[in-house]
Image 1: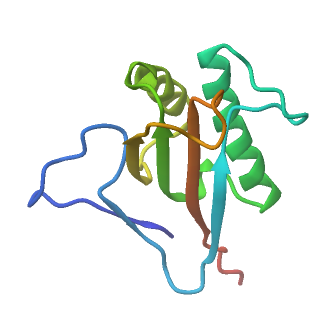
Image 2 (image 1 turned 45 degrees about the vertical axis):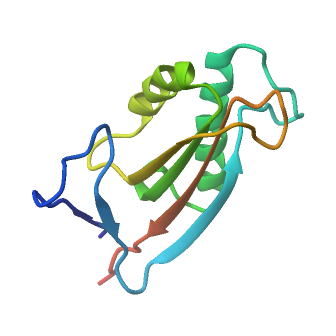
Length: 133
């Protein structure tokens, strides 16, 4: 089982994330490359909210392909081009992630790999297989 760590010796989380998450020995660990708000055929919607939703959907689909879910995410990195889009990303995130939250980092960046991308997300996930009798 993943161990979510919180300490009162530092400021509490400023949002929906844990201060740290420990991966136990023997867990399968998955590093997911940056996902953006693009459809399977590469179309990038102009609508900011559609891009944000697709970004999270794509992350979930990659996790699913590895036999994992968002509940297995240990750490997530958010890269956002425009600070005014942050509330949209948080709304989409909060509709999907439930406590205990993964650890997280957020960066407002000047540019991403393509000019039409507004967001990118990557993560580390870990699957702790259940002990079988």
